[in-house]
Image (cartoon, rainbow, N blue to C red; front, side):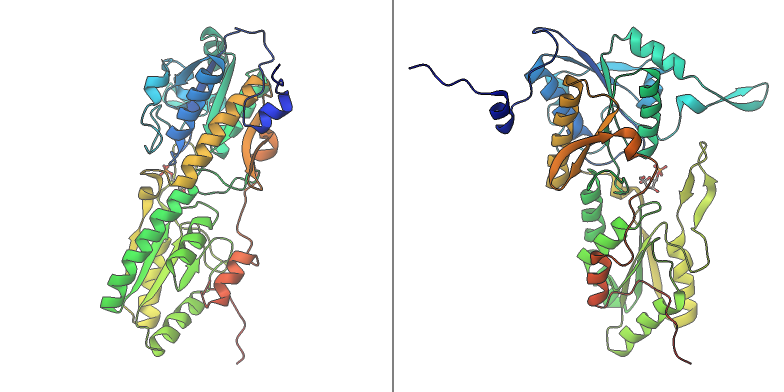
Length: 393
Ligand code: F6P
């Protein structure tokens, strides 16, 4: 009896890739780079991308080292085969290296003792062609994806994969690395709880997140913080101190405060580290925890300690969610290349992997809704956000 042929639609429903639009046996050479600050799950994306490209299509994958830098003056590449991605799923960081410095469209160079900005993107275009790449997959955050989009406009076949522990990209419900960072911060809060209780102290945990408060909010909720301070709700230090007083009065002689690095006081600004700007003009946040600690001690007399979690949030093994998301992103990136849908970024929406135009995905940030469900749930259980309220005289 003849067996029923599987239709294209049925194959896709079974998770099988679409047939290639190019002629059978047509070999493609795709480049991949990781740009911006690292995030747990980068290696897992590389693994999925390489495996899919080789197993499903027999393509060649070329890793570009150190982000876009590897396509410039000193071209740095390495072929990525099955052996190169073995064991990468649980490994943090990126085997390709990354940098959040450098933009080929605004390259800083020294001439006669003066720094000038020059556009050296043509060099990257030339090297892209010289390497014989049919497409370039850029795994990065807002900054790297903006650069990727500029290269797309110049004629590169670009596919983007979003990455950031900050979870601040508008076009995707989640970016890999975020859940792992929240796990790391939650573990820290759990540990701070026991020592805070023993010493009757206020313990401040300063977490990352740049201009959005997702890491602080979610880890604060998961770790049972008493006070959460996020950029989206400028804090009134009096409300923060009132909460500590109320807790002390009720017999809870310790308080856990999670503060996002981008949190700012009412009518105040974000706190930046001494070196306020990176060589490429990006504001480097940090120090708000210490500022608040000094104020709490002064206004309440409660002994206060600060822990700045820093880059621990970017390191380590990705959580199961991030491993799965990274894997699905890597698979989808290859699918977009295969379908020649360039200038698009893979995304995760309503529990499904999809894609959007890169130009629609960059430039605006996804911030916490100060009156949304998550903040609402936190406030319902008494978590203080330092919201300014007019008290009756
Ligand atoms: O965007 C990710 C992030 O980790 C932010 O949360 C943080 O502000 C920043 O990068 C730190 O960057 P750097 O690697 O330059 O210290």
